[in-house]
Image (cartoon, rainbow, N blue to C red; front, side):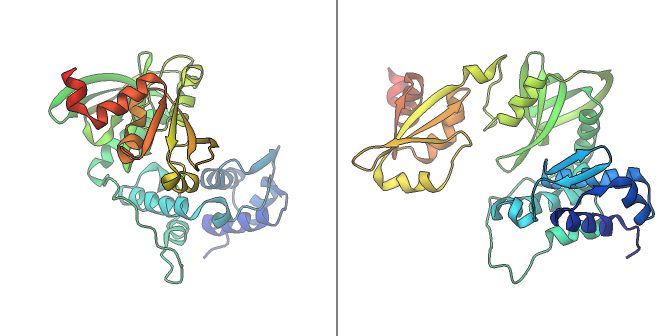
Length: 311
């Protein structure tokens, strides 16, 4: 491996940051016989992989704390990251095309001595849609409006939207875009005849926040959405309480309290009833919805669709 290999640089920079050292881009460029621009790209790659762990002062960088990968990500997050990188590597997507192959292979290699084995739901294969993904990447990066036809099992709709993010949710890939004053969530596999226009747009940062905050593909955007969230409160019996105490079924899950019988009371904050569909369906006869009234009625429809419909 040559002295100026980007993989070697990144590994060495990670090692020094993890030791608490202050690093100067100019000094690193001289040491590794490369440009400061390349060194800055190395730091950007580290930021992409590990999040906002770097403190920057002019040309100097340091890490807020030690951040070995296994300490930064939970085991399940690490496993999911490996699978997303494998999937993206097959289609040469933006997520991985700027990384060195040796760095990727080190990250995703399977270790026979690893005591953990995670089984997750099969995720969507994207190789067949690689051209669509690449066009969407460019449109998002350069903030270009796009046109496409959405084929939802024979129901055809034409859209002209402002693309914001490619979102991986529920084991599938979606495009989150601004459609007039709404946020449109589109399954990328259903996008046809994609056309990236020359017209640029300015991002709405509240919409960016909404896309970051949304918990399901059923989330509904409206201006000032954070002040309009609906609180759904459920009661979970003592028998099933342990499952909710051990795991968050949605990011907004909050344990409110418990009673003398061991039942627990949980709050979720969502944009509409449909966001609770997955949880309600999973625990259809094992939880009680306490409020609000619209969520109680929604659960009743799921349990007894014929009775509710007949009324």
